[in-house]
Image (cartoon, rainbow, N blue to C red; front, side, top):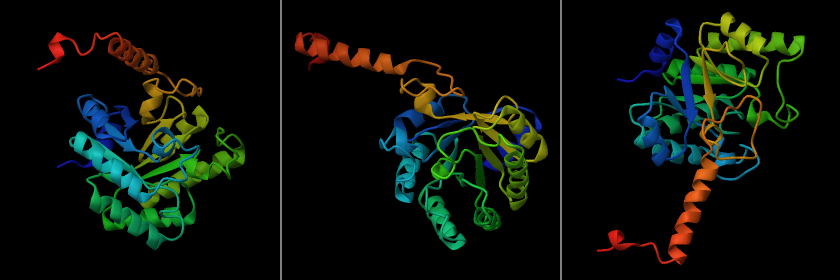
Length: 265
């Protein structure tokens, strides 16, 4: 039986970096299932890259469930992390329990992910862990709070912010989270947090010294030419590959080359 907590702990203890990639559909999940990537995150980033919104705010619990089901079907052997979207848990601990329970009951996700470090989030982390629902935390730049953070900016740059983030990471670890995403923070802070807590740290723009890394699939596959943050490395330029393929199809259709003799019954 899969157990994401034990697997992450095993990787951490052996000092083997953990790789995480986002995914939102069956087709790509099936492809990723044939790779060595460790885990898949069904992120509320689907609001941006799938739904075309300017933020993750509009994403609903039902959206997450729909996409998580598809990913779990495509990659049943991979560890799947389901994001809890905006206002699915910020109102109350009880509401958070209901939302997390709904996601876990209606999908085969291995855990849920919560953003933030408020007292409510820490208490919810404790309660969910006690109930047997693994919690993946998220600190630093938390997209659901981007409006109050002043936009997509590096977090933890001042001494006060640095100290607070280290303290909050310890509180979240103590509450029972088994891993934490660290997003857009100075490399030195990413290293300090990683060395200060016993759980895995998964970085996105958090430097080279976290336990692992996560990237959005559309970003690393080069599907968004206009998105080029410093932390991103594009491993292929699929945008031009896709355009060229579609243009070739179009030309063959209007040139009466497709369908060809080999494409008919």
